Length: 174
Ligand SMILES: [Zn+2]
Image (cartoon, rainbow, N blue to C red):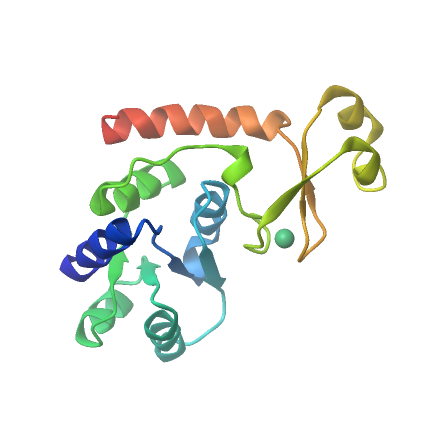
């Protein structure tokens, strides 16, 4: 844990956000971290050694719910958080809490939950091939991932995220 905290301190001094690598069991957590704007790699089928190597090479904090891998990461001096929460709320609260982060949910900062790509804003007339007519009529701002081609907007899923966010703030005492 100490490693992860030191890394966060250094990142804060440089004004950088921590970057994460999430193991195969925590895909839903990876998507949420991306939505919160954190650069998050999700490697589903890599072996443990490969995960540790990538963390070292790319200065990423490993998030895993595999106790053995967490122990291995300590031996390899890889920053790691052993994630024990039962759901995304508990997991996010644990990760942000340990790193002393006060997360802000802001769609303009989000990364693509599907592929971790950065999102750009597109006007309505440029996304009409990708977005259903009903959503085009109802929303003004659309985000587009240049890597995987997915379009996003603050639809019904966004209110669920806002509810998760308010529970998260309670959990973090923000
Ligand atoms: Zn994408």
